[in-house]
Image (tube, rainbow, N blue to C red; front, side, top):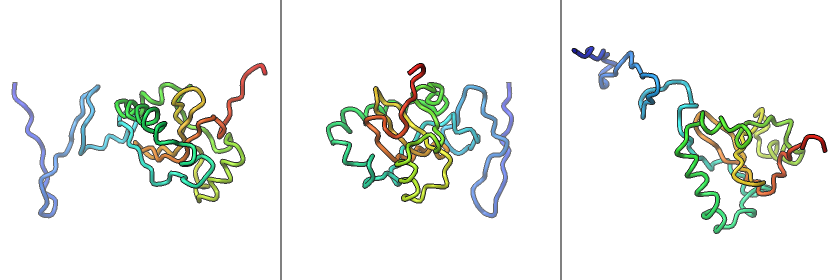
Length: 158
């Protein structure tokens, strides 16, 4: 059984680039090939927009809590793909900006993030939520909400 030769193209003196790369079903490229589907990618955490000074910032996170609770949860999510993370809709999902409390919407305005339609939230356990912006396979962490105040649940039949 002979293998097909790889097609190569020379681009203005740069290295050869393979064209027509086929990724078999169930296989995921490690790098170099953009499949366009970020649900197959593992999350990357970014802290560049973390709201240190807001009501859901660093004042609510002790070092002990960060290392004993947050770090293990985020590390666990790093082993999953976005498609798996979003499959659990009760725990992790996008929330329209209109569903957030007024204080959160006002804070987004102050941070000049008022152009977004909504936020993504991770339910880490009980009432604890981690809020941010899903940007492709990156999760830009914005707020730590240990008391589930940013978007309280509306219970049925209450």
